[in-house]
Amino acid sequence: MGNKIIQEWQIPSSNKDSEPYTVVEFDDGSMECTCTAWTYRQDICRHIRRAKLCKTHPELEKITLQLINGQVTEVKLQGKKAVIPLLSKPIPFNALMTMMHDLLELGIPMKKIKKFFKGNGVSKLMISDVYDWISTNKRIKVKPLKVLSSFL
Picture (cartoon, rainbow, N blue to C red):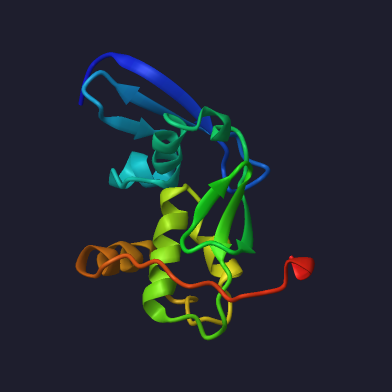
């Protein structure tokens, strides 16, 4: 770990009543967070993932992303929205894991991701399951459902 802080972010908690968490980046590129996942387990948390994204998208530091379906082949960031491919159910497992991974990388809480994909067999999945699956399988792009633009 470096000894000089070069950047700091205030990342919102997924609990709306909680104070934001502070993520700092040190001169050697390492990062730390004030949340319990980092403090007690040294796990890369969603706040650190969001801070990494904020390096290229600083406007995302203090907002909560809205999850919506759209005509995309992979998860895309559009303003304050994470656009997720519109797929028929049941969603193929490899597509589901790819989308969940991409949302975790955007710093979306797993609880919110599970709620969005409810009914697709994700209730027992853990963050580690998603990252383990992605590390041994390929990410995929999908072909979204075709819908008339008047219904979007």
